[in-house]
Image (cartoon, rainbow, N blue to C red; front, side):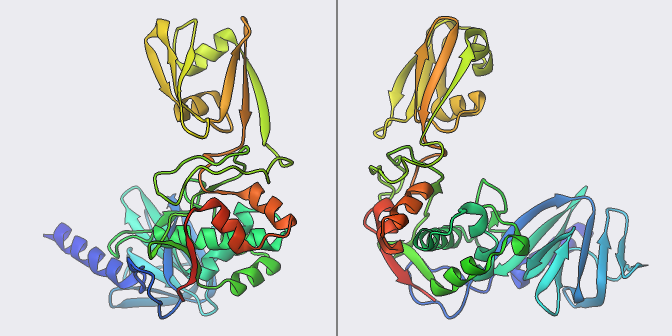
Length: 356
């Protein structure tokens, strides 16, 4: 019975703390800036500081300036508190909280996950972008930055989940790198403000604007119609356009986990990236991304040369290669293209619209 009651309270709390805004299937105008929830990880110890912080769950609240949480106790301003337990939300007067030494805008949601705590940052989309874009693209080229901002905004909006989910996306490379206030840069904040609410759409829907560092001269095909492989001559003079690495024969097969002696690339996609490699004498078939992970390659856009005792891999690009080429965007910006031209070059058939 207690377990069922806890689950009910958790569901009610999650609904109460979830984003107010739901991204519609069609890009009708939104009434305000959407809120997004980012997982900051699971931890056993949490320390939160802020200016007159308010801790609340359900109908219970507590106020203080310093909150310490462990699996054995919760302390507010150095004193143990029992009346308030996770899940709860932490808010500060100035909308900035320091969590384990790092500052974040918005509020923090704390969930008890048995042996640790899940920490989620709930923040409005524009403030979220302030902590993302400087981490994802380091350049002063303004049109490239605006293209990245719109791509990052569209990507995040596309991933907003139902209200009952704990969070929408993570803060690492598997989604978009997010570091909160410490990442913020004034001139990028200005570009975010100038492109406020602008997204990429296709057939009236906000799209999943995938992007990678360097496409190596041609982007890869994605699953969506707007993610078509396209030539890119703008990233040639930038890092990782071309790369090469070598392995001893023994190391090559050992890293691939196959006791073989010969190999052949048996399948590539339309952009030239490796889909499949076979090691016949080991009766082994590996996918492109498996090879990339096992050998620590920068992309699946590569050729392999067998030199007897030495295996040489010559590759292009860095990342999955789908969608926006970030260095390509920088190159286009330097050649005078605006952010709309950049986005339409890498995402086929899209519209660029302001939805809030």
